[in-house]
Image 1 (spheres, rainbow, N blue to C red):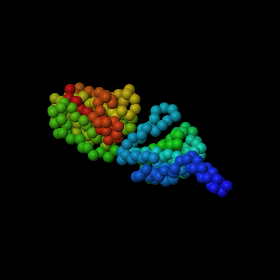
Image 2 (image 1 turned 90 degrees about the horizontal axis):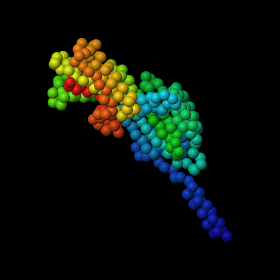
Image 3 (image 1 turned 60 degrees about the vertical axis):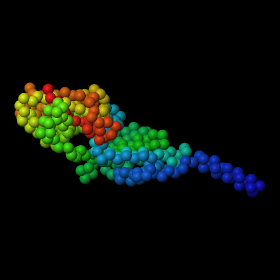
Image 4 (image 1 turned 45 degrees about the vertical axis):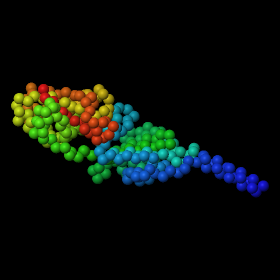
Length: 278
């Protein structure tokens, strides 16, 4: 009888063990973000990605998404607890809402049963975050907002050489506010070099052509690229006294990429202004 009891208990334990998912360790090299040093119980990190400079479009319950650029962290958590004990979407959203408020952050928008995003400003640093709850998953995205560090220097002589050789040249170093045609102050050096090129060759006429990555819709990118090209043209005319008759703006949108849009590095190369000889 004792042996029968032992066999029965062993079978029950085996069945219970089969119903319990094994606790999985975090993926090697992954760790919690310092903004949220703790996590929901019985979750492990399945995947992680960190981009020194990236962009993410934060969800909105109405209206367009909000793209934010800076250091981008993406973490995927997977539930490893007992079946039937996974926390609800509401529980996850409320936990993260409280965590955001606790560090002085502001809740921006949310769908209480699925996702929430917020913004924290501390010591001049603006950090955006978004949490999304799926089946057995939590997706956490964080952008530490900052301007891109410009490493490519525009040079009038190099522009001239490329235009003579190929009829066009890409100008990096002209930056805009995200999703807008407002030129950032750090773009003055690059635009100044375009003006220097035009003043050195009074017979040269150019198209100022705007290009975008593939983030967003086709029509909106065409409109955005046209607006950015026109903004550069206006600076050349108004601030550098270049005759308007020598310039024409054109928006090419996302239709002429020079790199893959699958990576942030590629998208950064595709967001550019080109000069094309008329």
